[in-house]
Length: 177
Image 1: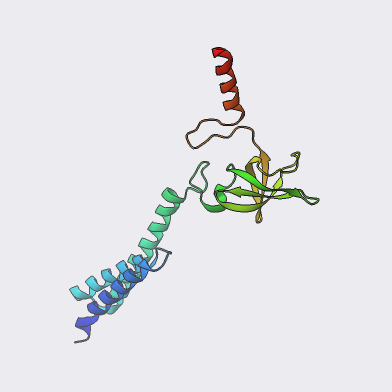
Image 2: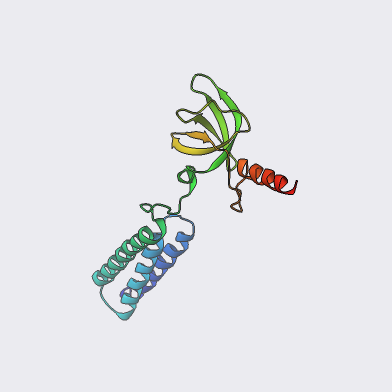
């Protein structure tokens, strides 16, 4: 009697794993849920417990390994230059504004980049930071960034601002006048 109901236990376990996946970020429980559902199908057809456990194990491990490979190859792309970067990995190359001028022996200042204020230091050979300066993040070290000044900054449309725009305006005025 209980042998005939094992597939119901596997089905409930599979549904629990799949529902639990909604509340986790690891994307692993889904594969164990599918493995449990595969074991439920095996039990429903009438195969023995050892085979049900084997099906559960093989399906779960195979799907977990396959998903890790797919994610690593197609979504993370960590080894490629120009790959998708998020968080602090995306900071180098970003433009910020100095909100607190340099002070102290190390010329420590504060720079706002994408709404977050960072402790910042000028890169080697750069003058101390002055409030209002536009800077580009060169590198991240610990919780601090190292920056250098920039004269021209592309805006969100890709148009150069700063000196380039001033030169364009001056050339238009000289041409007209």
